[in-house]
Each structure stands twice: as C-alpha cells, then as structure tokens.
Amino acid sequence: MPAVTAHFEDSVPAGGHVVVIAGTDHHPFDRLISWTNEWLGQHPQMASGFFVQWGSTSARPACPGARILEVGELADLLDRADVIVCHGGPNTIAEAWTRGRMPIVVPRLAQLGEHVDDHQAEFCERFATLGRIALARTLPDFIRLLTEAAAEPARFRATSSGSEADRAIARLEDLIEELVSRPRRLSLIGKGRWSCHRRRTSQSERTIAGSQSGG
Image 1 (cartoon, rainbow, N blue to C red):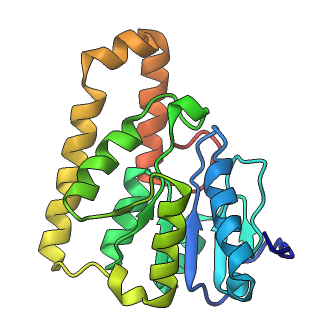
Image 2: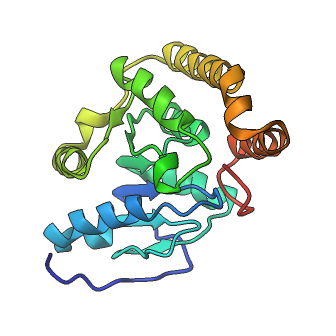
C-alpha cells in the first residue's frame, strides 16, 4: 500500500466530502479505520477530503480526524458530507437518512471484539436487503462501495421522501426493540451484564458523541 501521511486535527474542517464515523463504544473498531486507510493508500490524493471520527481505537486515520466530536460538530460535519461511512449504530444510520444519504455501513462484530454481540450485523443485514444501506461485509466490498461513492456520490443519496424516511427510522426502532427483547440474548450475556449493556445502548441511541461509554 502506498505511504500516506497521517494528519491529526483537533478542529473539524470546513469541508468533508467523505465522513467516516466509528462511534464512541468502548470496544475498539480498528477494522473500520484500517479499511479506510487501505482505500486512502490507493487514492492518497483524496485524503484531504476525508474526515474520520475514530473513537476507542488504536488505529489512526491517514487523513484529518478526531477521536470524539461534540454533538454540534458532528451534526455540522454530517450536514456537509457527500458520503457517510459508519459503524452499524442505529442512531448514526438514522442521522444519515435524515440528511438524504444512504450510508456505507460496516457493522461491529462480536467475534472480533468490536461489540458485546452481533445486533448491529443482524439489523444491518435486514436493511441491506431493503436497499436502505450499502453494507460492506468484507474489505473488497468496502473498497468497491467507497470507490463508487467517491466517484459518483449521487448514487448514495436517499431518494425517499421525508415521510418515507420517517417510516424507515420507525422500522429501525422496531427492529432494535425486537433484537434487544429476544430471550436468547439474556442467556448469552447474563442478566446483570445485559441490564448494564441495555442502559449503554439506550444512551448511544441518543448520541454518538461525548462519553466513551456510548454505543
């Protein structure tokens, strides 16, 4: 992979063609950052048009970025984004929809230590089937989707009306409720840990910025 000089900036840039959001869950999500760096290694001239929020991860982006963003900073950045790439957090996906964007989504996976379970992967599969997100399951998927989005961002615009977007968000909330209500998750995680996790998840659905304990 060609060398790319990393830029670490505390301030949010005025622009941002592509915005990558890893979220603020305390589990690291190095995979999303490394996949982004892999793409930037192939397209180093594009690095200045990227901004990455990397959260609790040891990897650092080869482009402008920040570990955590204030709520207002995040909103402004997403407002200006032509392309939104994110983890499978429901709040972040909904934020993309409200801005008329179909996000490229890489869900966190429990087997890789990226979350406590695979609820992100489960509802992302459902919304990919409905054509509501562009799901990147593998690095080749990610490279292909990001290349397409960078070349033609209009293909990743949500074409539905505001009312349709509202219905999609409501459906997302229903799926979340369905997933978190399944008895099998109680047996897998344990009642005490599940109660703690559910409180953290509820907080993260309100915002993906701020505390490291978000989802």
